[in-house]
Image (cartoon, rainbow, N blue to C red; front, top):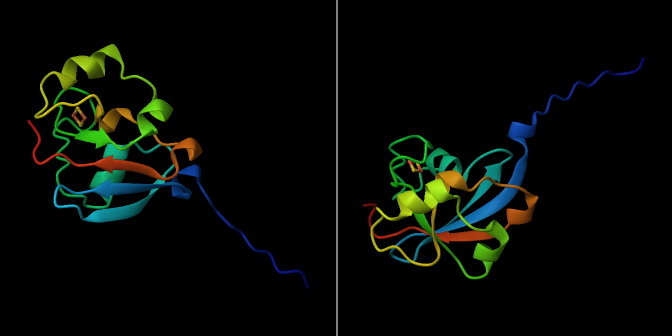
Length: 121
Ligand code: FES
């Protein structure tokens, strides 16, 4: 008699990209992110310290600031005008500064490395 196996997968359950968070003290935390997640969502889900995300991803608080490592900035493209405006409020802004809630993950970002600033705002 044939055995029926039902496998239920949602896109949300599928790991898509591995992200490395480099903490201010140099500790590296590597996590698996899921489809549709922002870098901020993945950080919160994995209890990465230093990402406050007070507005929950609404691009209105600038407390999810990160620095993008190396050449990854090219892969991410440029921030939106709204994100650029909020980056004016972050602590120690750099050319590689981004708001983690505005970066949504895809296969292309597998291996992304980001740095957590010493503080938000
Ligand atoms: S979570 Fe508020 S701006 Fe990103």
